[in-house]
Length: 331
Image (cartoon, rainbow, N blue to C red; front, side, top):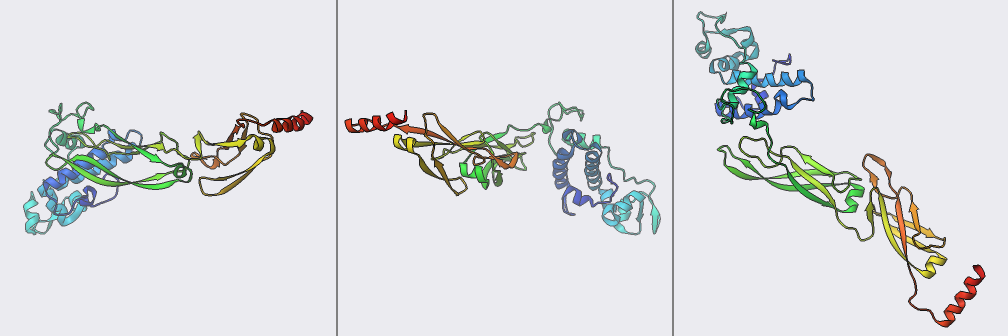
């Protein structure tokens, strides 16, 4: 085998030992498209090419009736050594030589078809994958391999509460996508996808499930993409990594102070003493009580409290006099 280790050809193609030619072609098409070296430009060229060669070698042997008979009897070692028992009826049918007992079949070669030829077979329709435009010659240029193109991605909004984005959560999403059946007719398939929402994710974060979208004939399935959206919260508003709270104060509270009680997004009770005189536009900052920072989970933004001071609509003469007396001494 291409990677220096003998493996079962049926296991490589993920087919049963009873697989027919159509089963082999379908399995080969799927794996060849997945492991073709041009689809893995950033990975180890040696590893990817070896894997692709394994797939082609397995397909080349199992679709050749003579080679498959010998492989079923003696395995890959028997194929590569060229020895087989010609006294066996099935082996005799596969044998190109005569004689009895264990002998070397000089007219038999287990070398698989070249990778280019195998891939060209399936592009030109000989591998059962249908004829692709521009593939009459079975060439390998990217413009000829239309099956490597993807269908358009499907995007869906994933609305999350601030609590979910604060603590993280696990969601299961039922999706429906259109894929062709064995005859090429479109059918709808339902599937459940699991999504791990990580603490600190922001609106617009995208979660991509490769090739879980719709599929069109001659194209790879498109991607399924979920885009994070934030649901409004009754108390907190997100501002980057910070959480913002608007707190109303009466004029008396602004001047004399107040104790604030807030319930955090993870359910803790937070007590905040406001003792300084609160002026219009005043803001109290509580460090490390904001949203988690997704790239640095142990760090959090700030909690910022902005105050809206409610002034009285009217004051009596006595109240005004009292205020002049009190505030006048302190002015």
